[in-house]
Amino acid sequence: MRISAIISLSGKGKALKRSLKTIEGWVEEIILPVTPSMKINKALIKKYKLQILYCKAGEKNILEKAIKAAGADWVLTLNSEEEVSIPLKREILSKLPGLMKNFVSVPLVSNELDKWKIESRSEVRLFRRSNIRKGKECETFVNPIRHYIEYPAPGAPIAGRQEIKKILVIKIRGIGDTVLMTPLLRTLKGYYNKAQITCVVKPESAAVLAENKDVDRVIAFRSFRGALLDIKNSGKYDMALCPQASKKTAFLSLASRAPLRVINNHNGKNYFTTVRVKKPEEYEDAVDRDLDCARSLGLPVTTKEVRVFTCKNRPPDIKGYKYSSKDTVVGLSVSASKLNKMWGKERYAELADRLISEESLKVIIFDDPARPEILKGVLRLMKNKVYIVNEKELSRVIRIIAELNVFVGNDSGLAHIAAGLDVPSVTIIGPDEPKIFHPYTKRDKHFIVSCEMDCKPCWKDSCAQPLCLEKIKVSEVLNAVKKAVSK
Image 1 (cartoon, helix red, strand yellow):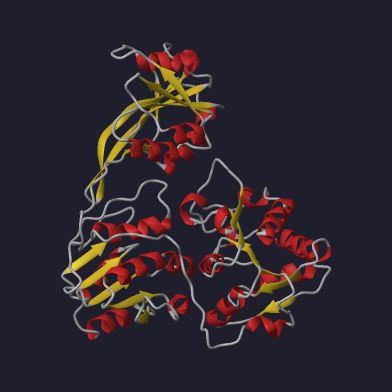
Image 2: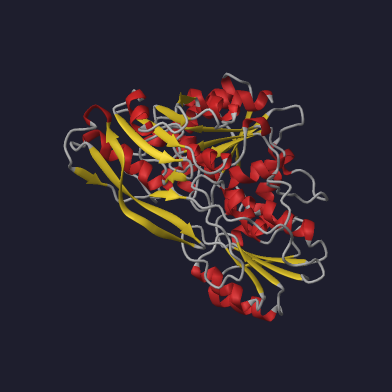
């Protein structure tokens, strides 16, 4: 089954790019009807391989003309201010191949302040090209096309430097999410350089911020009641931010008694916020989603670089594994937070053996205290001996990663730590969306190995047959490691 997309131009060029991101990679062709007065960025034409359909000014039936020019089985119509939601993409790819009807209607929603509002419950947007005029029966899909409205950010900071002396940032997520928050912390400290910044994070994430000079205090979230009391006993704050909010973290922000509260719930209502934060674009990466809190305050954002720091006064821990500065050391992390994020143990065993025997590289493997059976399964299948990093303290693991030549692993917190330490990395990504959760580039020495699937991204905790990982070959990962080493 092949799909052609037709995008009618409206709004600004930024809107077109946003729309293109949501259909890139899964439609066969993208057709752009234009009139002589319209200007299209040449870089966009090249990157997305746009097919320009020239039309006369005032010409009627432009859409019909574009549909006739399409070469695929189905035609999807959008305007440049619309995004195909990720759930709708999955629904299209899973249901369209077996569909007997010639038309498909979908809901249309738009972002109004901090929530999604239904504009139309049913609008025909998919046509079977060969039978465009045959039959009236229409299938209805449940997931929406999003009409994304761009709300302008303040032109200047809404709170002056002298007004803000204490800032509270709450993000109770995983280790990787804490790493992805570091550009926001740097932005806050960069402008409010005399303010004290306190972060509330999960206990396992505290080590990520321990040596970060942008953070003055870390509160480890062990229970809601404990965090609530800790925040209340810390005195009144001037500003509170929840960059990936839930009702729980939004309520904690109230305990800060901060008059300025920036609550950013990506999918739901921004409870208790005093500042309007825009809803994220569909493929906006995780760093930018956090930085939207700073933009809503009118703060200048100058960097998206994630950073993790080690203690400079402590010697490198890598020497404890009998490797010298002359060795090229590759660290493997074979575990992850969910089983369906883990590449197969047979593949990791083969990869480690080939790195040692074919590439003459030194290999160490990180154990996961929470899942020791994963590493044992890999070691049983290996032919070569490797050193095992069996550390329970994340701070020591961070120091070891900092000394590696290359880090290789699943989509996990350690992969984000490697990026934050500026260590070349190869990340094997299964069910998640790399565009959102891996905002790093080959230019910065960070490589991803991923496989496109119709069911991606998904948010399952487990999967009976994770083809998104099973289809990734050892040779693909090995080649990526070679590129990372050569950098």
